[in-house]
Length: 308
Ligand SMILES: CC(=O)N[C@H](C=O)[C@@H](O)[C@H](O)[C@H](O)CO
Ligand SMILES: CC(=O)C(=O)O
Image (cartoon, rainbow, N blue to C red; front, side):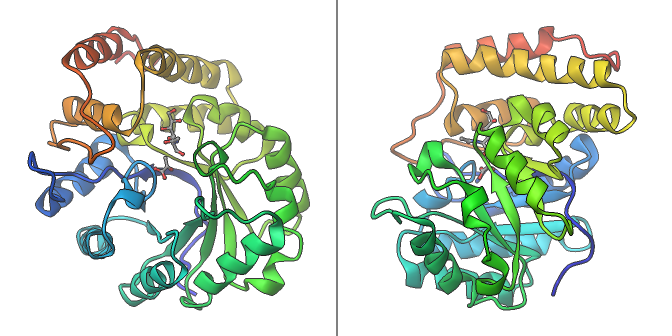
């Protein structure tokens, strides 16, 4: 298996840069990789997921993006995980084969969300068919019930999963149900699996329960601050870790009230990094000027414990 070391710490859910006329903007990715490493101290990426508008891209675009991230991340990034989930099983399988061929460090799949699996066996059967196309690549289930509407609890899904999916490596857990996460972690006695949390505003709670790390959109521009939270938690300096969580939460709480999604993430990343992320693809529409002004003022007003 292409496993160098256990995936821990932060993983940036990458944004898909687009040109003003809505094409994927591949040349920007080189700069983006360097920015994540140098400015955010983030060396793992999750490509073509929710933040990357993966389900709004064509198969061809998804392959081009995966290739570009692999190519630009070579010898720089630690882990490149490619999201290969799709509504159509053969398309998902094609993307899994492609990810394996280009040397991805992991693949992830969300639950199909138009025709939905109604129980864990149906869901595992779908995941197994995709995972089997990349038999040497660690496989992650991407659990995001608020978006897929598939609410099958992960604790249930994990039962016997290794026998059905030998490459099963862990879960990207994007739900607020910390009881479910805790049950998964407590059953992971041999610690073979990785649990990566995906609700950035309450990561500290998931760390306390035993999450290995996190995948999220905010690590694109708050990676450095969130890394300081992880360090404080590991020390342990819980009061300092809380301070960081309160402050990242203060920003998110503010923008969530204004209306916060992938389009707004693209706008925030553009003004923080200076890298043009461009517009989102329909049905998403650009963040308003008013949002950008308010979000920027809020972020600038925050005084961080590291004096920044
Ligand atoms: C629904 C969604 O996009 N979730 C992201 C990852 O799973 C998070 O990183 C959020 O963007 C973040 O927690 C802000 O709410
Ligand atoms: C947020 C996240 O993890 C994703 O974009 O898929």
